Amino acid sequence: MSLKGSCHCGATQFEVTEAPASVTSCNCSYCSKRGGLWAYYTLAQFKLTTARDRVSTYQWGGYFGQHHFCGICGCTTYGESPDWVDYKPDYANPKIGVNARLFDDFDLSAVPVEHVDGKNSW
Image (cartoon, rainbow, N blue to C red; front, side):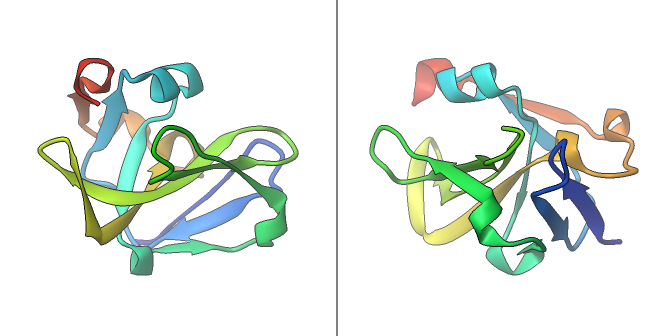
């Protein structure tokens, strides 16, 4: 079952190949201020369906990840980063973290939430 999602104004839209089995809530400074619940996918499972020029990007720290948001309404939409194993980046396995709060017609309350202590671990 593929899912579609979009920012508030609809300028940034995307699709994923399947519903998430779980989502991640992280308490690091970025995630706690942006408020996303993250569903992770491989690059092949994610498709941006609107023009890339509608997407703005924020990078910080070691510049290993790209945090994308709508350049018009500001919603946090998705990010690109290496996979993380034991709080260490695995650059051979990139992934897309999608803000699951943006999925259209999807009951997010039925999905288990995994909590990550990024505040004390990154």
